[in-house]
Length: 427
Image (cartoon, rainbow, N blue to C red; front, side, top):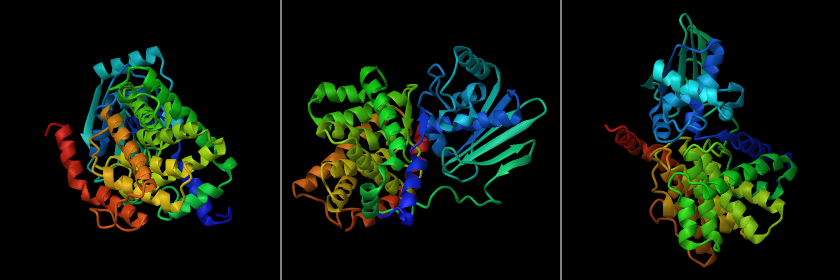
C-alpha cells in the first residue's frame, strides 16, 4: 500500500486514535474524567455531585476497583476521585497521581456530601453526565459514544461547548472505520513505514507487558494467569500467551495503578490483542520490526471487528481481541491473507457466544478463553481443518462473517444486554 493511498493515512490515524494509555477500567475512568472537567468549569470544589449514566456504563463500573482510591468501587467513587484529585488534561490517566491526603479527602467527601446517581434517559448506549454544584453555581459535562468524547459542557445552564447539534446522537468522531477489511489491513501492516507507528506500538509493548507481569507476580483478582501457569506450566507458548494476557486483566480489574494501552476503548481488549503476540515474538525470536507489524495486524483486526459491534455491548469484547491476537500470531508465524482469514473465521465460530456482564475479575478468564480460540483457529487451519460457511452464523468469506458478528453484537444482543443489567442490579 502506497503512502499516498488514502487508506494508508486512514489506517495510520485509526491506530493513533485507538492506542492510547489509560489507568484503570476505562468506564469509571471516563466518569472521573468528566467529573474533573466539570470541577474545572465550576472553578471550585463542589458541595454536591450528580451523575447520570447509561445502563452499559453502570454495568461496567459496578464491580471494578477505581485505582488510586484505596480499593473503592462504583460510580460515586470514580466521580469523586475525579473531583478531588483529577487532572482533566490527562484524559484517561486523569487520576494517575493521587496523594494520601487526596485519598482521605475522597473518602470524606463520599461520607459527608451528597452524591447521587441516576439512569441516563438519553437512549445512548454510552452516555455519562456529571453535574457539579456549588452554593450558587452549577457545571455539567457530558461524554457520549466513546470514553474521551466530551460532547457538551454547560455552566449555569449556559452552553460552553456543544458538538451535538439539537438531538442528533450520531457520533461524528474520528477516522471512518467503514473502509476497513482484512486484506487491506495485511497490506498496510506489511508496507507501513515503521517509524510512523513505532512510538505507539512500543508504548503498547512496554505498558501492557509491565502490567501483565505484575499480574503474574502479585495477587490480583482471581489470579487466572497464575492458575494457568501452575496447572499447565510455563514451557508451552500457548499457555504463556493466554496466562499473561489474563494476568494483566486481573491486575487492572482489581485496581492496579499501572497504565494500559487500550484498544477499542478497552484496556482488557488492549491486553488480549497485544500480549499474546508479544509473547509469541519472544518465543520465535523475531526482529522488533516483525513484532511491530504483527501488532499492526492484531490491533487493526480487533478494531475492525469492534466497529460493527460498537464500544459497549452484551457481546464480550475479549472475543474480538482474542481473535485479533490469533490473526497477529498467524501473521508472525508466516501466514498470509488466506491463513489469517481462516484463523479469524475459525476463532469466531468457537467463542462468539461469550457475553459481557460488566468489568470484573472474570474478564481474565474470558480473555484466556478468547486467546485460546485465536490460537486454536490458527492451528486448525494449519492442520487442514476449518469451519465452513453455513455452520451457524459463519458465512463464506471473512468479511461476511465479521459483518454477521457486528449484527449479532449490536442488534441481536440488545435484549440480552437489558436482561444482564437487570440481573446485575438485582431487578
